[in-house]
Image (cartoon, rainbow, N blue to C red; front, side, top):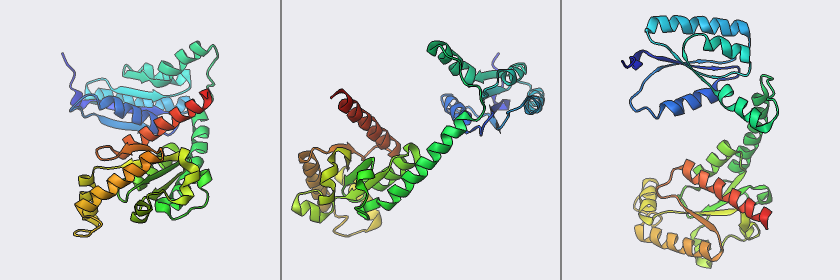
Length: 279
């Protein structure tokens, strides 16, 4: 007999903020189409007393629902994890599932100090803030200074997706990103802006289907030469020719999300790094 999942509650339990375990739990649930569960996040369960209080809530919820709850937890302490496993709920113990086997494989014990991930996250947060500041300060070619400090430089015709990709790379990956438009004057000269020539190993080019570009530009400046389909075709063709000649790695943004483009950039950066190491 199948349980009544419409009455189920899923608890996200963590000795930290609970953001990571909730994201992982929601990712797992997304594979079950049409499933809707009540979701409760219980962060900072970092003592036995807090765990006992949480267990009381879980037990009361299971009694009310008439079906056992689901628990996703990232808790370092084995004694605290054991309290939740005694509730009879279906427990997905992220720490026990992954860290303990990894400890066996590495032949060394895991550090069970609470808050280690927050210390790492704190450093990552500062890095991302610095990356965002750099990226906003180098958007759309507004600054030519400090390009040597860029991790990535994006180029492409206007409205092909450079700015949102730059910001996503900064926020998600902590990458310092500059982006430069390839403007009609560059196309007339058939050359990249001179400031970029010394950094071609960092450059990725974005291109886009001219018809899609025409639609995007028409929303911004309808009935203009800027948005004219023939002009879009000409700019895209000339920009692609220029980037190919300069050996710029190109990505098509026509049907890709910002997340997909960013992942491809990171993948290709990793490949470039590996090639440099092997060389």
